Image 1 (cartoon, one colour):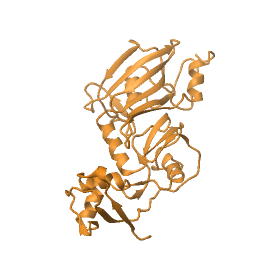
Image 2 (image 1 turned 30 degrees about the vertical axis):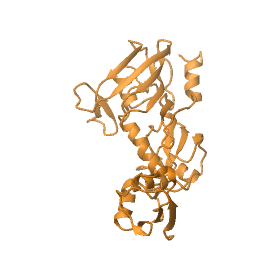
Image 3 (image 1 turned 45 degrees about the horizontal axis):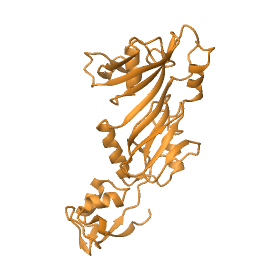
Image 4 (image 1 turned 90 degrees about the horizontal axis):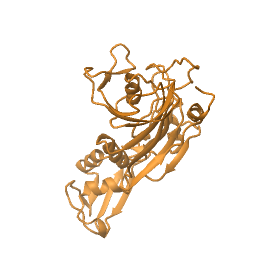
Length: 309
């Protein structure tokens, strides 16, 4: 194992009066607040040659020294396969995830995932002193579209807080069976585990599940299938798929929730659901930023090809 990395940092005039822990979180972004506090408690951080206190305000010219422990090894194996990168900076990576790609290894799928590809693409992705990608949110295996990855611990903490507080705007495009009536609405039905199928969720007013809110707007329809803009206001597992199926309009190609059959044509090889747009505040600058993933070819053809009914 490599030795700890010795850091010597100096406080600029503009940061005077900040708490030491807060300042270090911004400067040493691979460590979480808890890890920095642990280093302080263990006497691993010094200010002006003296052991630091976490509640100590810093002053211009203070010299702060710490030994940054080497990052822990990861069980993830780097694997080289191409990713569609929409944007990248020091804090975030925006990926246009293709359908069929798992987010991370699971039982029966030890590799070939987005996490494996991210470790190959960015070997310096270190979250909480472990080499791993900061997967802020998730998309189902067969759902395509825009995905946010945190590149350091501070970015992960800030973005996770935004998702928890529901200040992130997410917009999906979905092709569903039938023609929703009304054409736009808010689905407010709790979602919980399906007792009959361990890998599925269920929606019912008396299910005892967690609150779930999904808005939709019908963009176009041919009667047998419709293209919807869908805006989930909560983030329950399989939320969009479960809510639309509950309304009687499952996502086309979704075999788990009733969209796998069609009276007019064979089902597509994957569910017709795409994470089209996401908006949030940048964890580094606090500026509002928005990213869009273009409609994938298979959904585009299903919507706009006049031969598809």
